[in-house]
Length: 259
Image 1 (cartoon, helix red, strand yellow):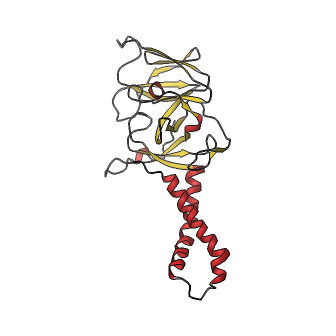
Image 2: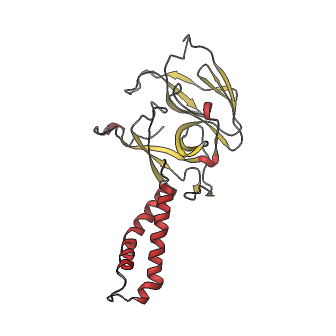
Image 3: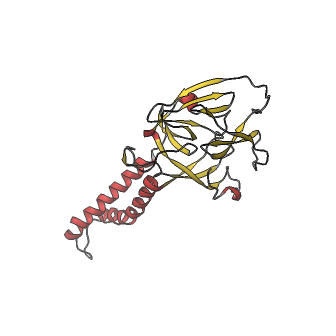
């Protein structure tokens, strides 16, 4: 069973806020400072006065500015690896009310190449992270591991000098001149001997086509379909920690900007 942290945080903030308001508007007038009141009520008020500012601050930051996430799989290798902790910019694609996720203020729209966290359409309690490949109205052709978008073949080149502990075949891919690394399990340039596979996808209006950088091991829009704009959570911008289990953090990944 998944835990809805946004709902819990919102409820706690609302409850402590109501208690603080009750104290200010009614209780402190009925029981002036220095006089003995109800012990239970006094205790609840004291705790609420202490926790409300902290809860409100966390709620505002988490809902509208940045939210931390942990990378649980290798679908975005080599850009992101299992054990990365990232910051997601919540206001990148508009401001939404917590819990109900209703947008109330427009900011920017996703650009091709952005790394985005979104809620899985089939189960919104699950968050996925992938790269934006297709925008609304795009026609995407995935032919033998090569991307063609609206009739234009996306540039791809070998990435031999990449610094990574991950094994595989690595390439530099450009999406609208935004370069990033992708991984394949087999060689795809030249006469690779791979079985040709041609797939064509049309991105509906109000939706985005997402793909993982670990192209042969990613459950993305090729399988789950395009992602509605209403399910976008925010843009992944930076790694703030990398740790697997009880091992020491990988200091070299801390602070890395997500390309």
